[in-house]
Length: 320
Image (tube, rainbow, N blue to C red; front, side, top):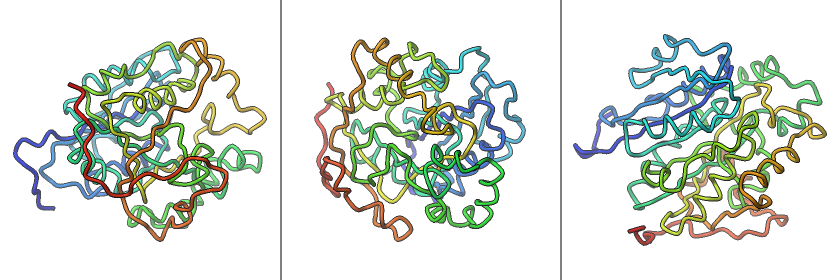
């Protein structure tokens, strides 16, 4: 692909965290490849695949075989929380624009990075985030009670040629519980987002007080703080999503009656000093209407948030 980028393009660093996810990582990392995301050949790009305290870490050779931009790092820790690892590798990222994937079990749709790059060019201090889907006909917290597991998911993925058309994943997926009311609903978190490194640092990155497995509500805390920062412009991508793979996750892959929300909410209140409350700010929407996920553009009557502008050239005032 020809590159029309300026010689001083700031590039993009991706920090993706894994914990004992050899099966899931292969698909996630493939979806981050330059070819799958249709990225210009000359764009500076790196993907850091971070194993966070894994007893069975990824194979470095397999990671590097996806492309010269891919690097595996094994972060040795006894903590199941990804916060410290995320902070370290966000700060060590080579480029000044950083995409963060707190859960490496999520396959990306093929237009995410191109749209994020457009948002990074359009706004001085953007916080660009994505919609969440679960592989399967229901959210995996509901499917697990019906026997859904990794083997069932492997068979499901074989029914679509997602490597040729990543948007086919919408046909075998359902919205995550936090995204159940569609693109224009009030989201509480995003498992794949992008911002400028200095903005992430200024906003405080991840609070290492969240020490529970998976980080508890650490990702919701970051979402709230980035939305609350007056100098930052929230941007929500339309027509794109991440697709969660079943991996026995502490919160995503347990039946609802065993969901650890109360424990996570108690940790949030202890760490932050107040009960959790969603602080989403109305975003600007960037993307298009795609037939593969047409139903997700309907505003649910059960959601009280109204959609913001679809197209705008407005810039947020500079933090300085």
